[in-house]
Length: 497
Ligand SMILES: [Zn+2]
Image (cartoon, rainbow, N blue to C red; front, top):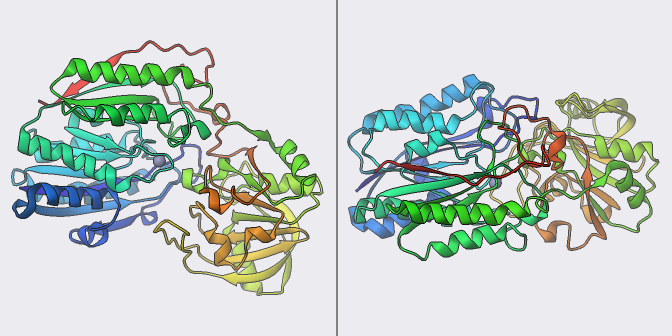
């Protein structure tokens, strides 16, 4: 059995004005993919272990190319075309010489010109590899599954958890489909039902929120050997593309009616909950007024500027409101501002300067002009508290102005925990109020010890207040952009058999 493995993953926010560049990605080529992923809990790691246990000594794995970018603004089209060439090029050598293919994908990519990059990659890969070879993929449940993708694949597995913890398991589920196609000769048919709703908020947490019902349903029907794969996409609401929607999908072994029945059931169960699957907010002004009266500590969650969702990280909306309102407590906040970080590095620790900070990338934020003292300087990488994510933060400075302490980075990096604060020697527990630029963090990082965590309705490219984002591309009507959207359940069926 010769199985080819590759990947291309990113999710973007259409509303981040900064195009993402080629250098933002990490690339693995050939056996670097095996060296990086084998034995780990990644999707590719899970797929390798499942394929090995299925085929044993009869297995030869061929690794081609894997491009991984974290969330950002739309990928510059020329950068994507370069990645596409590097992804597709190595496939040519294997046309007609392999038994199966697994690609690790995300599903919420977008370039400055192309709105279904994954569909493009799969369509081109299919042209190169031919009609007969089975291609299976993994996707994030925030992906936007498109008709073009479904026309070109034989199977798919998506995450069953949010926050995501089932990376390896998802890879194993995809590899199982491939095994069943190759060993048992199953003939996958898939039904999907698109639901005209985009969603956000705590009810999407699969362990305790309403959306967990769809996932439990999808997992339960896997008990039937006729069901090859099932899942539910809540999509990334910030990726404004034509097929943006929530959707249920079920792959069965040739049983179209069964696939349709289960996909319809999941979609119909999901639809009535669309109202509660929305962000619940405190207004900017109200959160600052409330926080001022509390003992603390308090987390001010600024999901609208979460780099992990694709924002630029340069919002000063909450701190500006705090300064305007003479907030009486100590404040700790992260912000991306390359010019301010450079200025601090030029002047040195202890220096003071006056400068507007914020809005370095997103012009909707007006720089906050204050007198700053350089408290400390650093550079290099930060190490996440739990994830294996070690991004370069670039020249970074801790600046203080009165009760406000800013951690100013050059690079936009994901802030899924407290790693950036620890990197510069600061502990949020020593501050009354901390700005958290992530929609959800593990409870231990903040929720377990703060007096309150305010979900602030601040402006930004990844605001959970979805109506404010300004979608122009996705099919309308869609809830909640049109509150009275109606849902007429309809199945779409695809099969390569
Ligand atoms: Zn996701």
